[in-house]
Image (cartoon, rainbow, N blue to C red; front, side, top):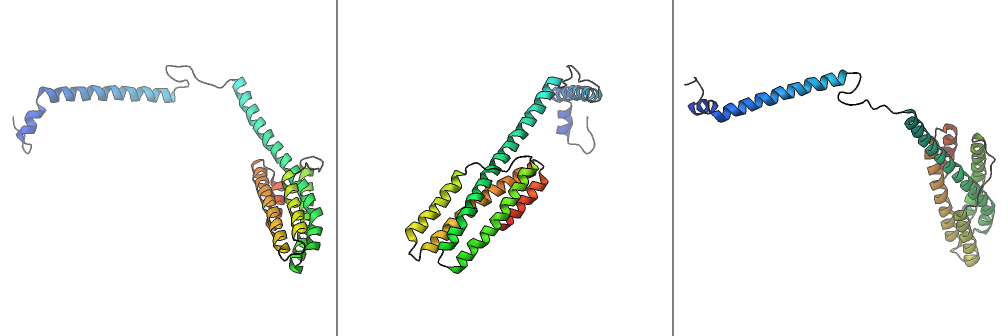
Length: 212
């Protein structure tokens, strides 16, 4: 038979058994898909999952999750406190060393810079003591081996180049190393304070970072 506007080859092909089978298969697939969609819709609206038991965390699972969360927070708080002790000891070492560096510097400008830094260090120590108080802890440090080594190098510079024009360059390099250590420590602590919700401590650390 012919259909106006449709080539005869297409008409013949649509009437062949193969196309009939494909159409039948497509119709069956469509029927099965519609049935699956309907079942999925019922499952989505059902109070319990279809074909299986509802997965509800039991009390033990919830307690374990809370314990893991609390444990992680306690670890971060301990890390913050230990780093606070470290930088507190470091700052007190710096405070003792700066007058010697100022005295030995050949340049008045460099000597004045060390004196100014000493005053800033005193304020930074006071802020650290405030953070200890916020945590309900006594302000005390633990030996900061890193700063101890850095400051020993400044002593070596004074001893080795005390009579040289290179002295100031060596002292300035030592001071920059001190600054870099302080910045890395205060930067990390500021980030941790923010994560732990210690807003007041974070503000104090930001003030110190502005001076570094």
